[in-house]
Amino acid sequence: DAGVIQSPRHEVTEMGQEVTLRCKPISGHDYLFWYRQTMMRGLELLIYFNNNVPIDDSGMPEDRFSAKMPNASFSTLKIQPSEPRDSAVYFCASGEGLSYEQYFGPGTRLTVT
Amino acid sequence: QQQVKQSPQSLIVQKGGISIINCAYENTAFDYFPWYQQFPGKGPALLIAIRPDVSEKKEGRFTISFNKSAKQFSLHIMDSQPGDSATYFCAASSSFYGGSQGNLIFGKGTKLSVKP
Image (cartoon, rainbow over all chains, first blue to last red; front, side):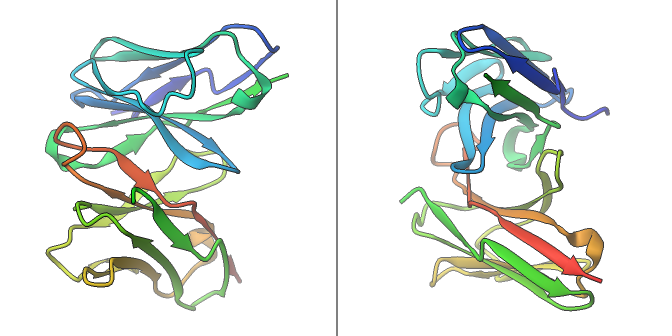
């Protein structure tokens, strides 16, 4: 398996623009997680899905953030409008049922100027 | 109560030495304690994990020690190598918090440097 795939790997955008981050989880995994990593706040869980259904979005910082999982092999995290404080590395991770193990993608480094 | 406190923030160890990273938690509902290793520019990767029914788990040079009464767990890296230089994160999770897998609560990370 290719592991969790994220795109783009780097994104530079101007404040106010819409940003869409994409994730393809490992085939067969029924959990998908979106995290944000910054120096100040470390790794933060934003939202997670089980069988394509959002379970907990309490970590989503503001209404500017939204996430979807239209099918078992694809998820998006959208920021609209983006702000400089959104600059971070965004990770997608997937996991399988009762195993508790999460497998992270390589991340998307977002820079908002 | 959801926090996982990790120390030290950074650690320098000589090649061949023992690296020790500590974590503490408060929530007794946590029932899964993994350690993740992250190299620069990469995502965190699961290194080793333990559940509270055992006090120690060893995989190669990596050992988790778990003290349920003290609500602490630690990662020991024996015979540390320069290739072990990375950031290490402890985490904790509970099946109580939604679904069967639960959320991972991460510590702030420890940057380990192993000097040749």
